[in-house]
Structure formats: C-alpha cells, structure tokens
Amino acid sequence: MNAPEPFEHFLLHGDDKKITIIPDTKVPNAATFSLNKEDHTLGNLIREQLLHEPHVVFAGYKVPHPLVAEVVIRVQTDGEITPQDAFTSAITDLISEISLLEERFKSSLRDKKDELNN
Image 1 (spheres, rainbow, N blue to C red):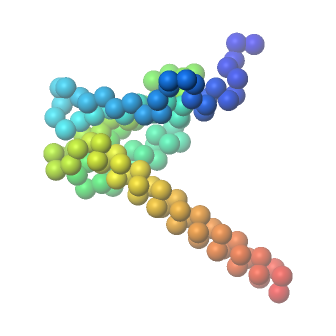
Image 2 (cartoon, helix red, strand yellow):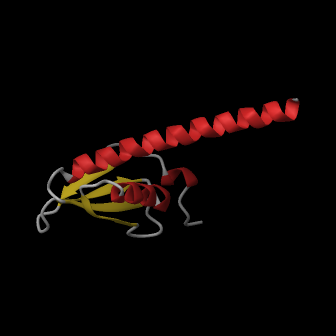
C-alpha cells in the first residue's frame, strides 16, 4: 500500500523541528508558527487559547494538506507583546487548564469509586 506507517504522523526524524517560527514581513506584529507532526486537534486548541489572550488581534490555523501532519498557526498582536510571547503564554495557559481538568477528573473518579464501594 501507499499509505504511510501510522507512527510517521507523530515521530520526528533526524533534524526535524517540532516548531518553526516565521516572522511576517508584510504585517506588523505577526508571525506564523508551523507545528510539525500535529493535526487539527492541537491547532484548534492553540488557536482558541490565543483568542483569549488580550493582546492578540488575530489567530487562525490551517492544515496545508490532509496527508501531511503539519499545522500552520498565524498570530497577530497589538504590539504590546510579540507573537512569540502570546504563543508561549497560550501554551502555558493550556497546560494549566489541562492539568486542572486532569485533577478534577481524577477527583470525580475517586468520588464515584467511593460511592460505588459504600
């Protein structure tokens, strides 16, 4: 078959970089982040979190081709912070939210197990 191996969609090879940052030369305070070996799941999560950042003017993402595991995220800020700072802040906030979700899930699971055991 011509289909790539399943692990090809998430394993980096050799000199592959996970994130490539391309500053925009035409639009001020804008940059494009290319995430290698990712898909719509992470692209949409990061875009949504970027839109919650107060200094982000625009955030969008696209998957250039459905057979290539790559997400391109474009960010424009109001100039108070750089697009890289907004991206870093969004990722940090996402990690915090996911950790909180994990804690709440585990707590609810423990409560449910205790309820069933009693």
